[in-house]
Each structure stands twice: as C-alpha cells, then as structure tokens.
Length: 119
Picture 1 (cartoon, helix red, strand yellow):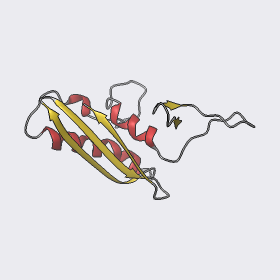
Picture 2: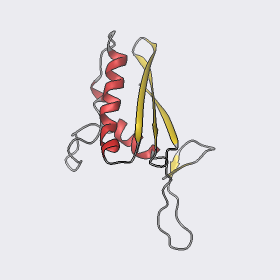
Picture 3: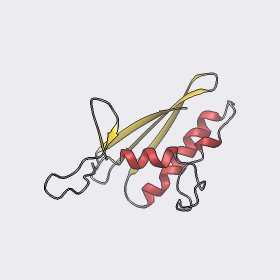
Picture 4: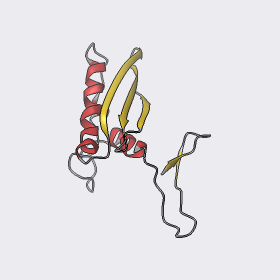
C-alpha cells in the first residue's frame, strides 16, 4: 500500500515486471489499521490486535490521556514485532467531544512517520 500524495489516500501499487504488490517502508498503513480496528471484535482477527479507541464515549478531564494510552497500547504490537519504534501519541481537545490524535513513530531504518485521526 502506498499513499498517493495528491489525494492522501492509500492505493495498491504493483511491480511492473512481476505484478507483485509493492509496499512502502513508512508502516503508515499498519499504524492506521492498528488504531482504527476494534480490538478482539472480529472472529478471524488475531488476539490483541486493534485498539480500544472505540470504547471512549464520554468527554472527561482524563479523555486526552486515555486516548493517548489506548493509541500507544494498540501500537505496542507493531513495536514488539519490530515494525516501528519510538511511538508517541498526543491527543488534543478541539471542542466538546471532539479530539485529534497525532501519532508519530520511526520505521526500522529510522525514518520518521506520523499521522492523525479526528475523533
């Protein structure tokens, strides 16, 4: 999966000679998948894969730290498997019940990556 810089959307990319899929080294798709997947909700999903971000329903004083903790916890799997390192998560309250979660990491080569989710 590669991100199209013009549309900011992910798309499949295939090698021209073999037809095999080509993946970039940012691990952005892996990070986003782990953040938006509901933990242990799908029968075929790996145990412990996904996040608990979907469980945050109420806006409290502790919500930003809860979102940050859930994001780091979801990405622990990718960190433990060596796909990413140096994960940071920062949630910012935009208004009542509205947040933006900014996540950054490094790939195995040390290249930084980041993404954000509106919640």
